[in-house]
View 1: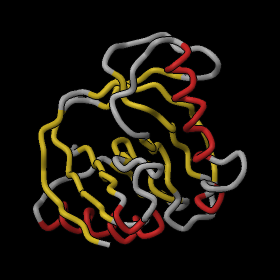
View 2: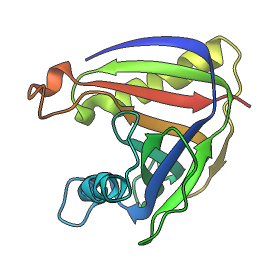
View 3: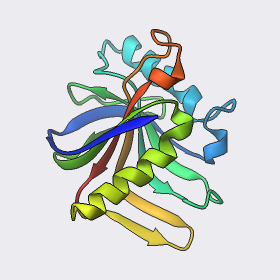
View 4: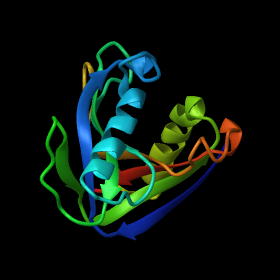
Length: 168
């Protein structure tokens, strides 16, 4: 696992996705968030909408103690607004400054990279919009953007994931 961290100005990113709640241990399980990804890509294909890259996990609530389920949207970036159906939603990651951690390695090691990005932001005096609660962290700007297609690169140690933290 390795990580590169920087502050970047980003334009707004539109996406279509499926809202879901799941414990982190359920992400790869049958019916978990990972299984929602093909459904989003299928909807895009059926409606002639081209994806602009790999899937994203847009978090709204993440219980750092892992007792409560995470609330997130499993999304795919797109170029133009659409009116989704079949339980999908359209939304946008806002324009602005993001702390970006470029994680290289298995998704199983992302939590260590998240800690490093948060520490980097604190050292560099960036405020991340999150609220600590007794049952976890309420995020208003945390995204995992998976850049590597596992069908093209089967070795998880080479997968690249951007960890995006919108600054306050």
